[in-house]
Image (cartoon, one colour):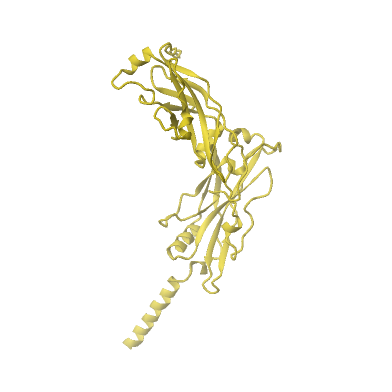
Length: 350
C-alpha cells in the first residue's frame, strides 16, 4: 500500500516538473498590445512611452528565466501619411533585425534588461531618424509636417518540437500623431542614412551664436544652434568647441591647431558636452594656464592690465573610407574682456 502511494506521489512530482519546465510559449500563443502609448518632444528628441500589459510582462520574464526566447518592442512610424516602416511581420525563419538591417537604433529593444528586470517602457528617438533636418527645431518642423508612432511586441523563440525559429507579434498599440493634419509636403533637405540606418554627418554646421564674456572672469557664454544641440544629443559624431584668443596686440592662438598635431595648452579645443541653461546658452570655462596668466597673480589685477580677444567655432568629426574628416563652422562674433571693458549695466528693477 505504501509503495503504491509512493509511486503515485513520485509520478505527480514528475508530472509537475514536466509542466513547470514546459516552454513558456506552449501556453502563450498571443500577446496583448502595448497600452496607452504617448509621444512627447524633449529638445531634439521624441520620447515614446507605453504601458506593458501583465501577460506580456509575465511572458518576457518567463522567457528570460527559462532561456526560451525573448520579448522585444518595435516602434513603427510614418511621416505625412506615408507608408509605415516596420509593419511587415517577418516570419520565424527570417531574423527580424536582418530583414530590417537598416533600422536605426532605439526603434527595437528587449523588454528585459541584462538582469532580467523589465526595462522602463519607453524609448528615445532622435529627430533626424524620422527625417527632421539637423537645423530645424522639431516644433517648427511639426508646423508643416506630421509624424505618427505606434508600438507592438515581438516574441521570438525556438519551437521545441520542430526546432524552427518562431516570431509571434502582438497587435499595435494606439497610434499617436504629432504635427499638422494638413502637411504642406514641402521637401526639406532631411538627413540621409548609410546601409545600417546610421544618419550621415551634415556637410556644414552653424556657428556659435551671440558670444559674450562675463565681466572680469574667464568665462564665455554662447548660444548653441539647433544642429549642434542635435549632434551632441545624438552622441554619434563628436563636436568640439574651438576657442581662438589673443592677448593685447599679440598673435592669435588657434584652437583648431590641436587637430593638426600642435598639442599645446594654449590651443583651446574642448571636447566636453555643452550643457545649456533654460535660454539655450552654454558657459565655456577658460583656465589661467591656457591664457598665460602668471601663477600667483591676482586675476582682477591681471585683467585690469591686459586685454583678451576671443572668437569661437565648432568642429564636427566623422569617419569615412579615407579616415577622419572635419566640418568647421563659421566663427562667432568677437568679444573682449579685461582692460578697456566696462561692467554690465545692472538689471532694471521690477
